[in-house]
Amino acid sequence: MQNTLKGPVTFAGQGLHSGQPVRMTISPAAAEHGIWFRRQDIHVGDAMIPARWDAAVHTPLCTRLENGSGASVSTCEHVMAALAGCGVHNVLIEIDGPEVPILDGSAAPFVRAILARGLRSQAAPIRAIEVLREVSVERGCARATLEPSRHLEIAFEIDFADSAIGAQRRHLVMSNGAFVRELCDSRTFCRQADVEKMQAEGFCRGGTLDNAVVVDGDRVLTPGGMRHADEPVRHKMLDALGDLALAGAPILGLYTGEKAGHTLTNMLLRKLMSDPANYRLVICDAAQAARLPGAGVRRAEIPARVSAVA
Picture 1: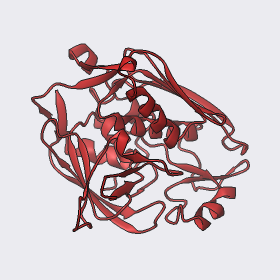
Picture 2: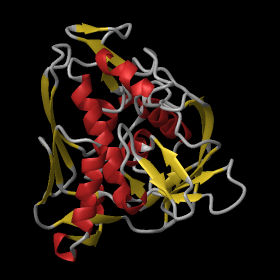
Picture 3: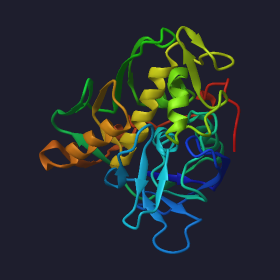
């Protein structure tokens, strides 16, 4: 059965890249509605933006969705990961600015609020996208691949010169609350050497040590250090789940990312969808539904170190 929220949840914060204050409310929606954003600050033209792979435009550092009228919303990957990881299929996300609030830089504040509000089952079946054959895209030294699997799996590897990050890899079957337990509290990260350059280019104006892990060589500058020894690769997996959620339905397949990012994952979805021989839509039976990322997730599984923000 599809799920929506039992009631609305509201978040207030600032955009990571714009630095501007923003308020966002996630509200229940009818079965088969899917996930849509509505820009409350747009009063002329189409303010509705679909959370879908073919609405994504390629921008550095985040995922941005844009409709045919040019209305857009950026940095949607963390809230999309939270919705997918909690098994939410139908919501309307109303936002009064062009960027989702960054909060603490992870998906945990969204997860905590969603699970605290609770889910309501809806009388509609869950449809999933079953990957039938391997699909891969490359860009420079980065690569992203989808191949068949009975459930969603994410494997990722990164390699940074800063020894505080270095080479990291992780592989996780995303069933039965694994996202909430293992990934949701992992924060966005960056190198101190890149901060001034990004800000000069108009990015990360709202970035602080409270909403990002910043490293400099072998040092972690963010107070308290890493939440996990491999927090950076876990965050890349979090981002990948959020970007894959733009497929419009849960994916049954193994995603492998090698130094991949938002653009490459979207390119992969576009290639997957470009040929009907790559995938098929299936109606999940009880056994398949029980293997999806949000199935059976409980509030107690949220890492205790993360405080609520709502």
